[in-house]
Structure formats: structure tokens, C-alpha cells
Length: 342
Image (cartoon, rainbow, N blue to C red):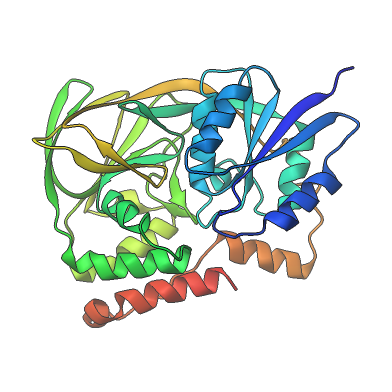
């Protein structure tokens, strides 16, 4: 019986920055009786995609070791191939990893790769770019472009940027042809969701499925400051569709019309979107490695590990007083992050 060939692509600059620990876990925990591993480090932006494209259909699994950007690059290189994408999450958001129930602990992520259970998921195509998780235009895209220029990265810096830029940003007019129906909306942002969440358990499309052949279009209109607490709570509690400022439409194809190029993002990575953009779903186009049905049943939790698991997966917000919103948005968002990272 031949061994499965698995290539680990490691981004040494990923959000958490623990490349030595990750490499040690891979070497120590990989089942060498069944797997022939190799480790490759990326050297520049786009390198992970290039490596994945060269390896597609020649090996069994390519593992993205890094954040959402690395996962997007590797997944993009594997779309439509027989080679599976696996994830060892080392970023700050880990959106797709969380959606696929991939543990944030490297040792457990490697164990899932040892088991080799796979399934297929949809991917979204925005012009000539792929999004495995969530793409978008508007405020979140604006922030992704700003964040790309920040030298010190991480969730706290990201939230600081949101708090600083939120008062300056204004909703914009958009024209969308959604499955041959014209919609004109003034929106703060529009997300095109394949999965339920951006990352960090912030759920923009709670009803989304990665294998239904549909895009969840989440249109969030301009909202007043006093609506921020409820929006935050509903994003974290998977109940955003109940908010009156949110509209969700399921579709297969979207034509986006604008008089100029738009700032956009795919899985948090900044892109420029053409004035007439085509957004579509490619059903079950990507093979991914996922936990087996009994993986979590076999995990043994101690009281400490249970506490760590809850804190890493269920951030609980502290709701500020409505009248203090303008001054306290930044502080409250920071409190949410600090509580999540304890």
C-alpha cells in the first residue's frame, strides 16, 4: 500500500507566528507509516498559490499552514483538482478552519490530516478570483485594503482600525443583478458568503451552507450608532438576519454594476473589482480535509482544556450603554478581543 503524499505549505509571517512549534508538531505527530510529508515555506505574497498549482493532481493533500490569506491562496491553486486542501490554522481569524470544525490546536489539526477524511465544498468566483469563505464590497473591503498597509498585524490592530475608520465611512449606492432580478441598494457593506462567518466566530450569514450551490448575499444598510450593540451581539450569536438593517438573498449569480472600479476582498484579502463584475458559485469545486464523524467524541477534555476551548470559540461581548456608543466603540471591541484571547 503506497503512502499518501502530503505537502505542508507554511507561511512564516502568519498572524500567530509560531512556525518552529508548527514544524515540530508536524514532524512529531504525522503518521509516517501512512503519510509521506514534505514542508515548504512561502517566500512572498502569492507563493502559496504557485506552489499549490504545481502540486495539484500530483499529490494527495496540500496543507495551508497560516491564516485566511494562505488558505485562500492554497485553495485557489487546488480548485477543480483531485488534490485536497487541509488546514493547520495559524492566523488571527481562521474563518474557513472554524467553519470546517478544524481545531485551532496544531496537534489536533495534524491528527485530522492523519485520518484523511475528505468532502467537497462550493467556492465563489469574483471575476477571476476565488473566495472559499466570504467575499465583499463596502466597509469590510475598505478595511481590508487599509489593513494590508499596517505593519503590525493581529486582531487587536484590526479592531483598532475598524474603530478609527468607522466614523469616516459612508454607505454607497450599488446596483446588482441577482439571478436576473435588479436590486438597487444603499449599503454600508455587502458580503457574498459561502460559509456562515468571516472568522473569529463573527457570523455574517448564519444560514449559509458550503455545499448548497448558492451564495448568501448579505446587504447591510447604513445604521445609526445606537444600533451597534445589537449588531455586534447578533453577529456573535448567529442571529444577524433578525436585524432590520440586514437583508440576505440567496442566489447563484450576481452582476455588479458601478461607474468605476470598487475596493473588494476575497477571504479578507484586498482586491480591485471591475465596474461590471461577475460573481458566481462553483458547486463542490474544492476537495477539503475535515474531521471524522467521531473525532470530537474521541477527544479527552480536562477542565482547563474545556475552558480554553470555550474561550477560543465563543467570544462574549460586553454591551456598552447606548448613549456612550460614539466614545466607547473602540474600547468595547477591544474588550471582546481581550476576553476571547485570555
